[in-house]
Image (cartoon, rainbow, N blue to C red; front, side, top):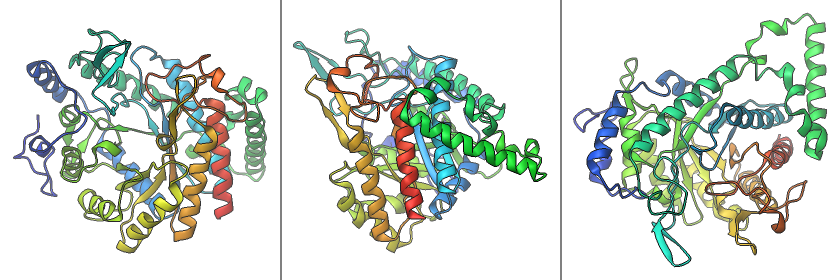
Length: 456
């Protein structure tokens, strides 16, 4: 384990968080067992290496400069129970489809970051939940406890940290092989989800776009360009991220890079702080300040310009472009007026942040049928308000951050293939928050592409 004596070049320590209040941490029943697990994690290989995180930092620097767009997407909470190679492949496929739409339509590169290979822990508004008069600890993600509503399942188990590490390792190995082994080849865009492409309005739009790409590739070949020798047409950069909620896990996977001397969180290329854990005097901000990764911070409707500027100073004092992504999550009704003063304050202070929009969390409600859900129209309205706010302040609307799955779930209301409240029971499968399905995700990508085109 790293200790407070091992300072980073920025005089920060990954262990400094231990002296500060840490929100959203489980009540581990056996601290000795947690200590043994974190010591074992500290001996295991890093999940990602520092050079990959530096590549992402450079890519996000281009987003901060208005020369690229960020797509950060993936599951609300990864599951131990439904993990498979096929599920990873399908989630990657949807994200790549969305990225193709955004890149081809906007004319700027799309930086692709998955909420994957580590997105297991979930913050909760209450430490307990009550069902039929029985009160148990809340489900905090499979990295902590089980989702079954039983006393045994809800006990936090440190052994789950190791299971999360090994599942993340397997997921990363598969992602690397898929993105480097031809799966992301632009020439294969017609082969992606043929049943989806032919069965939905969004799919028909995607097919038309794929036809255009195919014609462009044939034109390049006819002009004498050897498209087979261009790696950027046949493979892609894909990065991983998660909310770094469990600080003992993150500290155990912090490593010093021998090249730079900096400390890196090696659990993912990018980690972010949630809305519930962004206290300036709290443990999460202290830990994040100690590592050199690109980092994110969620910003909700209660955030003030003064708070956001203080976060920028604490998390990116050297003002490195791409180091800090501020992810707004305000709700469709509040985004435009709530975001503009934050944009102006950060712009005027000269902080080179990436601004991204999380249109999901501010639009969550419980439907008449009793399901936690979101309306696709509200999600799209928040994105539209995000773009309008940036246009008003002359700043770059840098990206979107969405929860999705490739599966044909019925968790969010509406969309081109409309899901009604009465449909939610059909395939409501999330272990936590409602996600866009594959069709709704591609519909969102086309709407974002329209906003990008209108801005150019």
